[in-house]
Image (cartoon, rainbow, N blue to C red; front, side):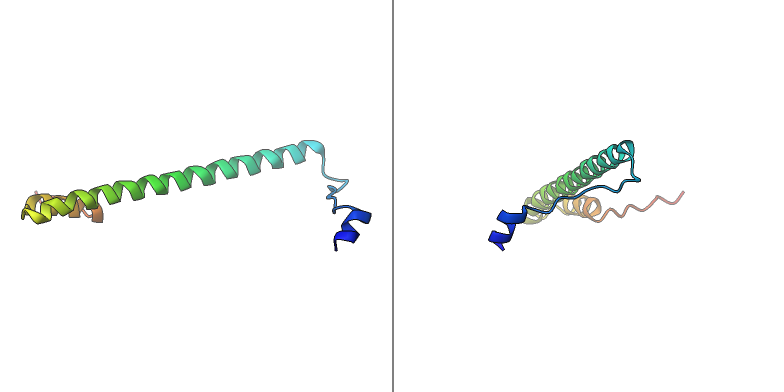
Length: 87
């Protein structure tokens, strides 16, 4: 395989003749935006994980001193379930 690569070189990709250079540049821009969007989403998920872990760590001392209000509030934040008050 290595001898073949030395003789023939690596495979080169050529674009189709009917695709314009402008379209190729638009394609590159789209790939860059997709990568940026993917990195942003990944960062948001990591931030959310750190936030949830921080809330869970804050709930541990509340459980040790039997602070029911603190535990209840933290549980509500973690589950994301908030009931509307009946009027």
